[in-house]
Length: 268
Figure 1: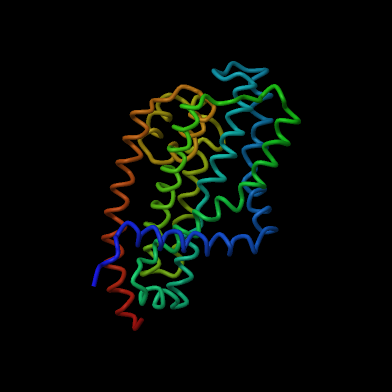
Figure 2: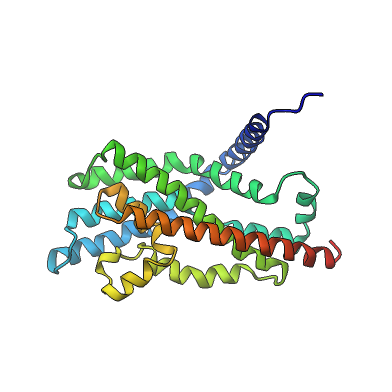
């Protein structure tokens, strides 16, 4: 009997998962709108920094601040992750046992649901962007095609890195019922070091240099700057993202194996 081509099999599984979870996400259009609006903090902060740029001495102009925070809003729409709460619930409620009976690692179910949700929320995000340019037309810009392609690639990598960070933390659910508290604690670093509150250019040089060795600036600040066209060290950024991704994947696999033994030991 001829075996199915591995690439065709992988494509069939991926397309099935994405179509199923995309249809599932479309059932909650109203909730998706609220999720999009909940990520509008950069738009609120934009007004503060535009006013500060008009009265203070900053490296960015008011228009550049406006474009930067709009890019931050867009990048956040593509990189938001909530997998730790899903995985924690599956472990606490015993639903992970059913996932383990399937010949597919549960991580791919979570990844597919997140990936499909990006496409479901896009129309709402584009409507808000159009409204922004209507209210603030001087900030309108068209990225260079090469710059846009590079930014999109980095946004995908940023989403994968953010997913890996949270999924690795979610492995703590095998030992505690409140693994999500780790994410809530880490969110403080994410909020201040990722560029959501302010671009790293306004940070003291020492703080900025330390932040650039953490994964957080590469989740928001790095892709946002690429999208706007502000100067960044692309080579260093990609290497740091790759280093953190590989390290987190290795840590996740180690915790996964130990966690499964802990999970089965609890009678699952």
